Length: 171
Image (cartoon, rainbow, N blue to C red; front, top):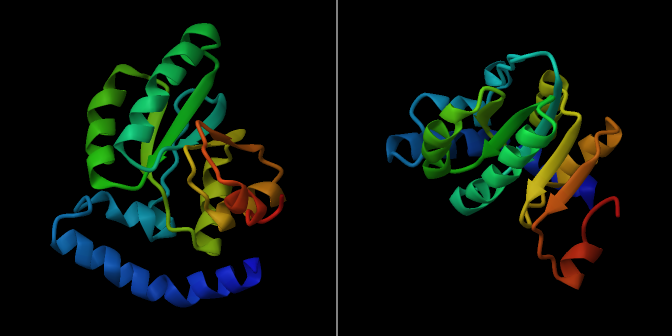
């Protein structure tokens, strides 16, 4: 099943690029940062202070807002991590731009499409120590690649049905 998914996402990739460009034209994507979703050369990682990186993927506004208190708490208690927060939507990216100004150790990027070569390059570039998927975001290529690179990955605040859990690859 994962092989079929990977073939399907690779075949769809050129069309997804066109879809993203179309979304830029209708103002549903950031006119500059949309490239973070589709092009490897825009995965521009910059270490803020050479510490371990924790990656949170929060698809949209609600998920994004739900992890801010968690990051505040972790910064207070541990203050030894950098954080990457990825989102999918333009509105969550706009809120991240405002909300994350108060943190010196948190960066926002748009989540790349769940296409195998993009995900692998993203993981190699950012080298997260741990990944947290907020709510029930399931990205098969990300999950399988994280397992291959031995990066612990967890769902937080997740609500999965029994049927969904049975169909998650690798579990």
